[in-house]
Amino acid sequence: MKLERFADGAEGHKFNIPNYAVFDKQGNLYVSESGAFRQITGKVLKFSPNGSGTIWHDGGFNFANGMALGPEGKHLYIAVSFLPGVERVAILPDGSAGERSLVCTLPEAVPDGLAFDADGNLYVSCYSPNKIYKVTPSGEVTVFMDDWEAHTISNPTNIAFGGPNLDQLFAANLGRWHITKIDAGVRGLALASHDG
Image (cartoon, rainbow, N blue to C red; front, side, top):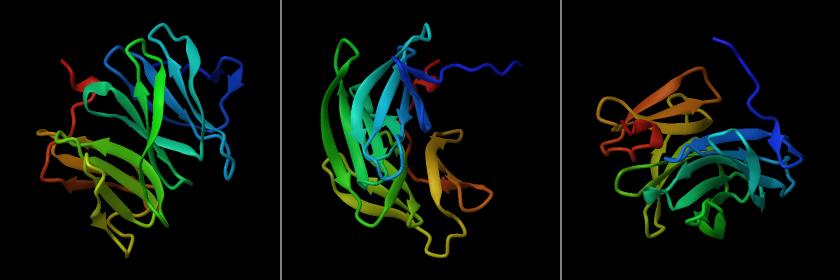
């Protein structure tokens, strides 16, 4: 195996804090560029299968973090850590960025990771507090998991559905040294990588 640099930015923009990567079914790679702390300079870059990159959405996002493609692949959802909340950007038929809209706000939280279940519910892991929220397609926000002791989930960052039946939610814990496996009781939304 050989480690090679894929990109250090695009269109004359050099990454400051490249954060999270998402593939779509066409093989395009979206990468969140967080920008800088306490500056609203976050953006999303897009790389085509041939490796050429562009600034897909110039933001500014208030620290663009984890991302997820929505059901049907028509929107890219972005955890915006210092909003704090989640925004989404429409993916137009030609692949360009469309309308940007607010999905939800999460007061007194630092949203970090995103994952969808097969029913279209969005799960949002928060670096602080130690919670994972569930956002329904209609925008209702509830707490899916809360660990005030910070032992099972501790500053959870990225999350993803997996397991044999795609019904386990895995959370990386920046505040500890483990990955949490949660029996979610619902199947996750299949990703582009799940297509056989």
